[in-house]
Length: 341
Image (cartoon, rainbow, N blue to C red; front, side, top):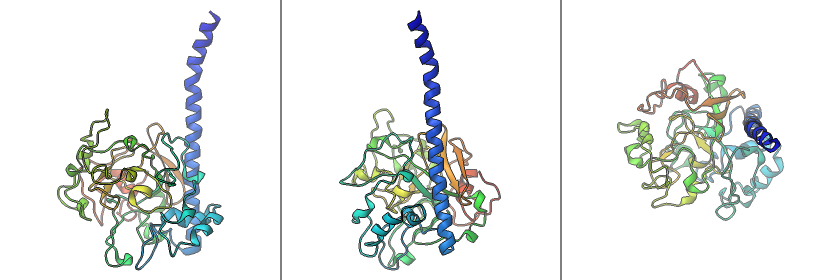
């Protein structure tokens, strides 16, 4: 009888204990994002702008991310100096000083850590916002004039002044989180059966032209057996290592950027077999029901998976109000929308 009572008590208490632990993890994750927000504002105090979405160079892009520029403003001065010693001469993936795991860049609720990966890579969970536009970056004669575009707070090889966030810093997303895809079959939210149903082509402006249909990302691949059949994130004709979400030092879209086209924890999609083609990259987490975010004013928040993201059939735009609902408007810095999340 006593054993039965103890068993009942354990059955009652265990879920409560687990819920309390997850609540604490979610709070720590939210604090990590707030620290990123504070680092960005300290950067603004020094340079007058947010950090660039990737390193600003006229002729050579070494793929250093926005997070590299934040290091000196979040009590990581020594690491920043170590990396900076070879910043001008080495790509970030050749710079051994980058291969350091940073606790502030790791969500404690993450379930797929397996560090290091791919011969020394380290992983991370936080991503900066490129707004309601397909992430994409490609070399176009000089990096200073590359054919890249962003509607969000962060732009590849460009810096955004807070004054350029005309929708209001409290109404605009700065950064969020994204689960690590290790092993590749564990990509949170999955990928579509066929990426060609989402993207009309792999051109830079694929998400601006007829045929772009993010709602087709719901045509899920075999979620039970995790079978990949298309060139989504390079499973076919590319490297599975591209699936590894989050290398905090690397500016490639798949590692340190996200967009606000599909709601949090939706499927991810790529129009090709590498990390520099148009992509749908929603934030994701193991928190129940949504993701943590930090706004451009430095305040934190939580966005539900059920956030209004429109019909899922809109096109990406370079100006004007977002076609992806409240979620898309939250991502754009100058769409003319007055509301926020």
